[in-house]
Length: 251
Ligand code: 13P
Image (cartoon, rainbow, N blue to C red; front, side, top):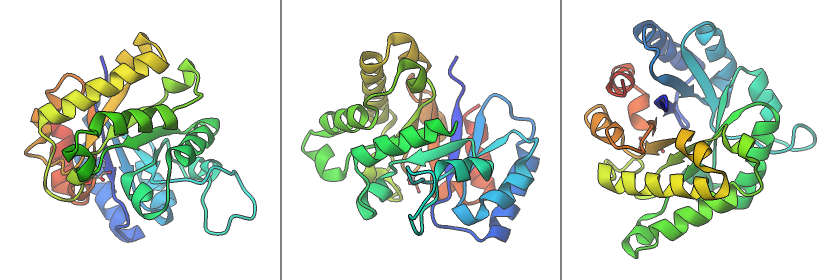
């Protein structure tokens, strides 16, 4: 009932040519997959070129960030209408790297989600605890605060457009994946919060991705968990073979 969604977060990697090369291969090799939503999230400078490649394919595109104002004197920023104009369907908001290195907070995440929805973009909202929080038993408190503050003030109709990505920070780029059980208990917890702030129907339909060292050899076990509906993939999305294997592993 919930369609799996596998998204590649390419982070700060790949020239325009390298991006086109990768997505051209993905398009060719994954053209017959219709049971999984496939998303690539390249750097801003590649968005328009990638959009030309994926037109009329089963691959969608997302941006990795946005600024909440539409236009004006905000040197260096990129807004939701411009991302939409470049061909994006999705936008990642509140990735832990943005929280860690660029001062992103639950309040800025909230503003960015509003801007994304106003432009018709589907937000992929990232939450997740750091290692110290996990080790001191604060995971559920941290995730609850992130989810409730980031998603404050949205109507049930708006909440139905969200995707949430649970990415434990200690599992990102470290090779340490959360066990399927560790991920499942947090995903279930997040679904429960959505039932409280939205309703049961929205919670049941909400897609929650896991992120953090997802690889072809662990995708099946992760996806076998009841509340894991896909993956947000960093490193393993940069090579055609591993991303193709990940999408097929989610079938
Ligand atoms: P890795 O898959 O490289 O651990 O990165 C996960 C991530 O941050 C996806 O957004």
